[in-house]
Image: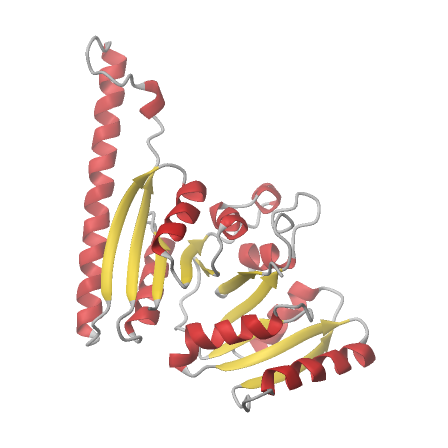
Length: 289
């Protein structure tokens, strides 16, 4: 069964990610979409468990916390009903549900993913430009580090459609064939064209590797939905974005090979750079082979 988990915080970017997820899932028969809101009760630790003997400040904190939680529950219900109506208008039988949890998103989202078993987590990202956020990361980068399923991030500024042209950035890792197969499973109902691209500093050697990858992908079945390109460039992230612009790419997919390197302090991975700065959706696989 095709399942998508979409965390929501009711921001404009989050709403875009929800509608993107709904449009993607609505085209798959029997699909499920789960909306997740993680309520962060910042005042909860300051309010005693018992309401007895509260001083005026504690009473105020309790009222504010309760009001904020009630508003969040109402917003989740409004979004849930809006997406259900939109799915029905598309003639889809998509099953949409929602869940409300308490805790930090970077902790709750991976935990809910373990329970719901989604094929994909789709969430918004601000695309931070500041060095402070680029070094320490955002919620989306932390979720990618912890989640055991592919994570698709949707930039706040993205206004495009669900993917028809997907760029898969290969570094000739062990999981390339498996990851491209997963792209086909996730988006095959859209019949997208997949561009398998490597940014090379040794074209002669890498040309042979790209040919070998092509042969591996075509083994047993023709791969008419894939095109291959070998590009040169010193800045891999910049070269990928240039190619994406020139070919009207809708989605960039790549793999972060080792757990723990994605959020590295001094050497942030290519995947993290693209999640934070790319103007188009980025799909990240965790390669653990």
